[in-house]
Amino acid sequence: MTLDEVEQVVAAAGERPYRAGQVLHWTYARGAKSFDEMHDLPGRLRQYLKEHVAFGGATGPAAIAARSVIAKSSDGTRK
Image 1 (cartoon, rainbow, N blue to C red):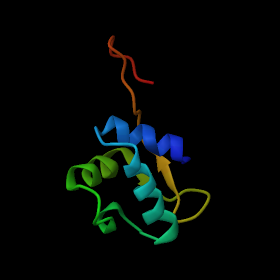
Image 2: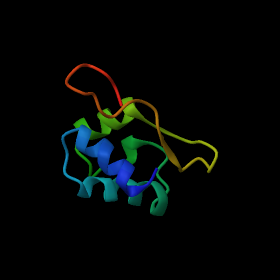
Image 3: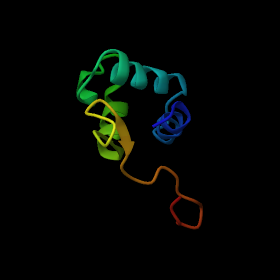
Image 4: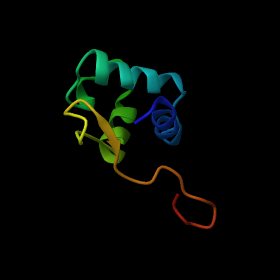
């Protein structure tokens, strides 16, 4: 996921955009293997990420990929 994509996920969780940089830093620079390792993130954000984002994929074990829809419109459709 790109920084913009992670920012969207973080915003959907109700957090500030700088948290996306923390997530990517933990993922790529520190080699975190789970969101539980990201101790400087609030627990509610880590839980949200576990429910909506997955580690792994074609680019390696440290890559993160969207697992579910991050936006829902007022009429109930998901984007």
